Image (cartoon, rainbow, N blue to C red; front, side):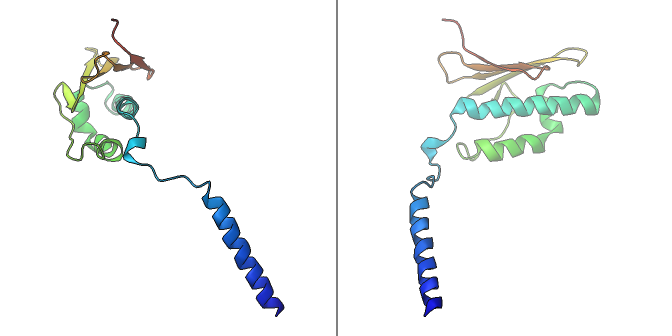
Length: 146
């Protein structure tokens, strides 16, 4: 009889705590909760900076976008799969000015390969929003002056 009473009390306690805790559980993220476009693409700027550092150590110089894309296709495809594909399932990086739909990249590498300037512009934003970075790894958020 005592074993049944202990078992019943334990079961009721677990059920009560389970109900209490579930009130504080987080809801699964919805499409509306996803990161906005700018925050999402900030990760791309970070990835480009990281890949440029790898390029410098492996080849002795920073590389322009077409070469980066060729050397580090797996890294960029990994970023695309993790962060961008839910919005654009068929998106692919391009070696043209528009690297992703709505995003223009300018990656200027110094002639000696010892420095670069990266400008990633949101082509759909009327405020002229852009991310800017260079070989220092510091990323800046910019808007055009009106």
